[in-house]
Amino acid sequence: MPLRITTVDSIRTVEKLSPFRYPGGKTWLVPIVRSWLKSLDTKPAEFVEPFAGGASVGLAVANEHLASLVILAEKDDDIAAVWMTILSDDSAWLAKQVSDFKLDSASVSEWLSKNDMSVRDRAFRTILANRVSHGGKLAPGSGLLNKGENGHGLHSRWYAKTLSDRILKVGQLKNRIFFQHGDGIKLMESKVGATDDVFFIDPPYAKAGSRLYRLSEMDYEALFRLAARLKGSFLMTYDDSTSIKKLALDQGFEVELIVMKNTQYRDRTELLIGRNLSWFRDYVALVQQPELFQGAEALGATGIDGTDQDRG
View 1 (cartoon, helix red, strand yellow):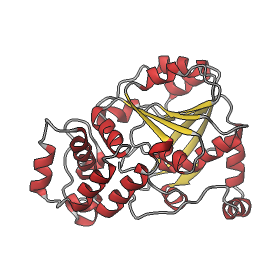
View 2: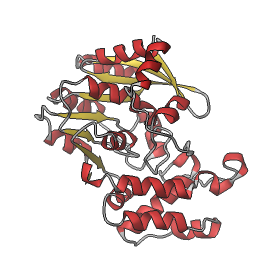
View 3: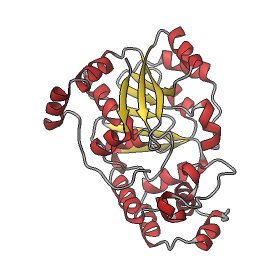
View 4: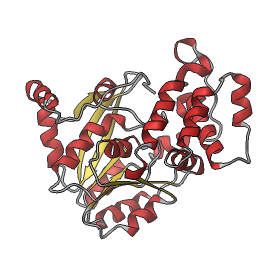
């Protein structure tokens, strides 16, 4: 029976650090990733996230120091600009730019129409586009929010103080995070033999990727063959797809299901894929016994770190 979780669980147990809002964001998965990492014999030397996107998982790992170093890779130029800026000396500038920005239709149109700009300006434009577009979509043709949440229009997801605080907090973690602007597949290939590294593989989903991101094409057969060559432990996520299950099983991987209730209160089934998911089955058994799970929370086993008001 698959584990059933809700976005409420994620908000309660995870400090949200990413400035991005994605329909496919993985904040809800952080408690499960904690369980995976704590099941390992030793603390990972490097936690590698080759398809960073909003990087919710990698940021949580860095924040909780669950690995000695977090390595994020992102191919998309706009998303990469955000991480390059936040993890540089320009993080304070970006935080102030967000907090001071006077958001209205004219200012949004002016920024979104900019082309030639610095990396840090591009970072601000990307965060702005992500926050004022339908569903946080960055793919071409994405429309702007009209009515938005509770009729607030463009302001619906523009939480200036929350975003500014997140940027500053992630900036403080820059000594624990290395960002690489480039191909995540090549990054994985360069670390195939690393036994002390672990890999969180969250590739663009075939169905939704083209609607959400600019760079969404993926050779999934090649990705699974590469995952099979990794010497370090890995955890892969994907939406519930028969073809993906087959690719996983063909490589001898284990597959488990999670049913996640999204912000629209609709069930979405996701796959967890790895070589050995016994630790996940132990986690499910614990979650399904509330008295034991609550006791584990009280002891800090689930790493409750705080909440904020942005549910994006």
